[in-house]
Image (tube, rainbow, N blue to C red):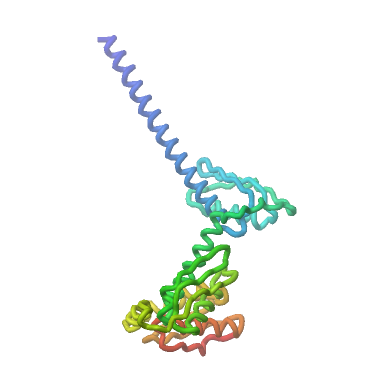
Length: 275
């Protein structure tokens, strides 16, 4: 009986120890996965940042503490890297070991675009395509948009020179655009232009005021010469009212033109848009 009790106690101890070891291993594995996820989030944000992507930065995370190292040529870049790391959920401490060297030369970029540049170009194309889709001019909806290094190529067909010029203006005024090559072909034949019929039908449908307001604001957001945050937009029965204080007359005129081009807009009131 005594021997049985000792064997039972020993077996119980082994089982408890094994259970604790298994729980510890599971916790360690979960922490390792979390560390990797946080490292990836910080590093990806660095790649997306035009101020940091060219720098040689390294990131490691252990138990909520991020360690940053590498080189930048300005203190503000080091501070930006620090703020990005602290902004990641779960990061409670940052050891910023990045060195500031004013003569630091970023690594030479190869011929292939980096991840950040690819994302930038994709954002540019999406912004331009969105503005074309929201336009009241029918044939801009089928335009294909390609962007490489901030240089935009527009392809497709349109029915008038005015619509082609509009596509150029919408593209060139988009954030991040360096140049626009408008290769749209003017095709005035309505029988061949199927997109025109479809877009005309869409224009004939009722468009809500809230939809118009959202698209006008989004158009401002995608444009590099108009500040969305300085302009209040309201819509009543298709009539858009703009109000706010802008930096120049050119910005005011562009804001009015962009609003007028949105599908469903009947007119634009801009008396409250001052300089």
